[in-house]
Amino acid sequence: MKKYLLIFAAVFMASFAYSQSNKEEVDFMQAAFGMDKKSIVADYVNPSAAQKDAFWKVYDEYETKRKDLGKQRIDLLTQYAEQYQTMSSEQADAWTKKVFDLQKKTDKLIETYYKKVKGVSDGLVATQFYQIESYILTYIRAEILQAVPFLPNKK
Image (tube, rainbow, N blue to C red; front, side):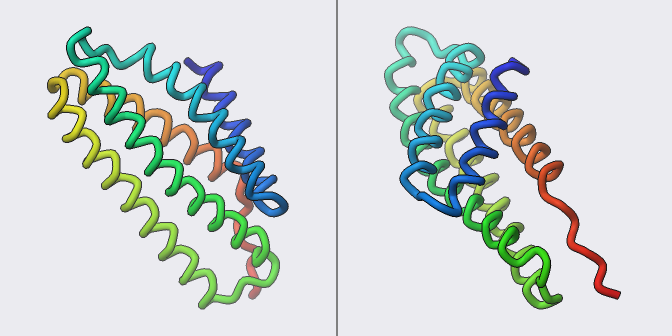
């Protein structure tokens, strides 16, 4: 699992680097990330044969919405990188509020799709979905936090 997550982190950070120059490359990287991620989810989420088709339909819907939020995250990171050296107090505050809002949207998306997954399967499958998504998201958030430098102290 750790090997897969390292690949995820590399793909994510590469997509961040590319986001400044080419949106098509970000889309490509997200698609590659999505394919690898789907295979990991398949290893950890175990719907029954009767639940499988419905689960993957809901999961694919979730991934589409998650990727939209991922693009917003990349945009925020790009904004941070562009303003890093000269960011004012007001810009920092506005940027941080956008980060909070995006985290809330992401957490709400997982909660919404937990309920949808449970609706087409059961509580075990829904919890497996929640656990793997939360694990991957936490790992990616930690990688981003390690890669993003602290704002310089201007005092």
